[in-house]
Amino acid sequence: MALEEKIDKIKSSKWLFSPLSIIIAFLVVGPLALVLVFMSPFLTKKKKIIWAIVIIILSALLLIVTIKASKEIINYYKIVFGPMTY
Image (tube, rainbow, N blue to C red; front, side):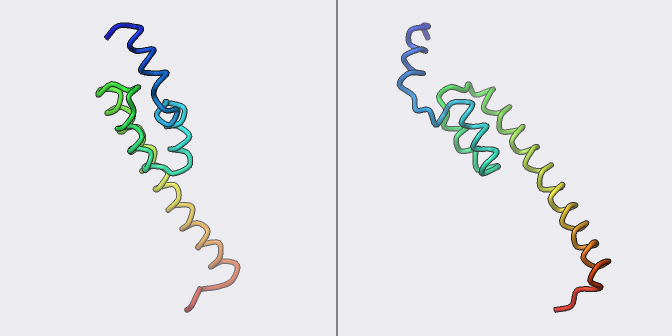
């Protein structure tokens, strides 16, 4: 693909598929940003796979941190208010 064709492709592509918008989408909607990764005309197949792996790993790490934080909050509530009964 010639350089001019690549420039035309980038100019005609929507801003939605740019790498910056993929990062913003990940920060907002997490792993749902994978859709943008696989639809992006800016990324080669290899880059799409790398982006997907990074997004999946970061999402898993954030999920683990969220679960640990939730358990700690529950423990603090048990200390302050006693056992929770429903």
